[in-house]
Image (cartoon, rainbow, N blue to C red; front, side, top):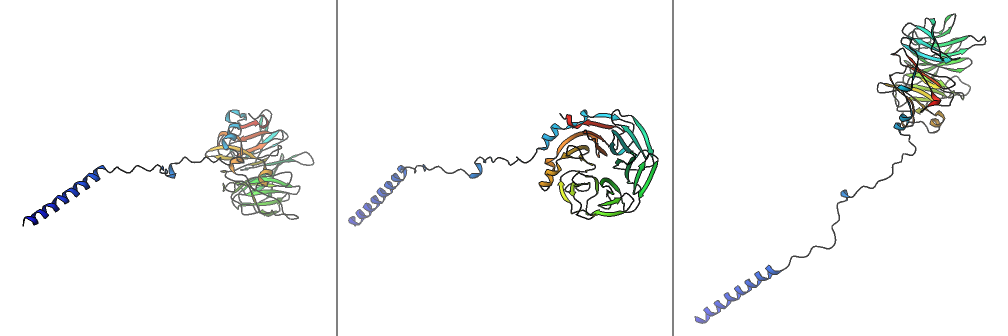
Length: 340
């Protein structure tokens, strides 16, 4: 009995000793050292790589604006035409259609002297002036209000045609026999002969307004109803009286109205930026070669404070630019080759 009790006591002491050793070992075992290999940072926190922007072929619009004429650079030529509209230059005189009294005024471009030239033209957005073989002035005017093409001489007005016109807006000389006229309501351009024969020349436009033809025969048309197709170009198909398909020239402009080909080889045009009227220009040959220019490549020539639209725009051979808005009587001008 005593022997059995001794054995049980020995076993209990052994268990206590083992438990004490285990507790001592756990208390003195060191925590493993942290890894010497650094943990990578999340890639989102790495600084971005600066890649140079590809802007070499884009002309910043603000650069053009800084070089442009502003309202303060304009001089007032005259303020005697109420609600002026279409305007043209010939022989150092301006001829301006006035919607206020259905007439045309003659203005001396040098000093602004203004006289009433003739009465009877209701509303014309563009005019084309020339002298005939007898050195007599002839003004060709699409009458927008009455859907007529009118020939104006000092002795009176002659209706060339009242057919094929639906909102006639712009006019340009095509050749010795004919003119081109835009129909803003029919979205087309028609060819009108001097004796009044009308045929469709180009269709599928978007509210076409101003137009111009250069010395090489390239034809430029403004699409007032589409910023994407702001200005397009075409040519006459060989041995025909119809145009080839229109191609893009300038895109991204709002409310383009007048288009003028100047003696310096640039195409000038009036358009809007919000409610403000601007005049810009491009090299049409460059735009044709590039498949069309965007608004970033337009050089702003005039950044005016006049309310859009700029209803009248014409440029003399010596690069005097004349411009006005339909809402004010003043005719402004500036010398283009004296840019700041």
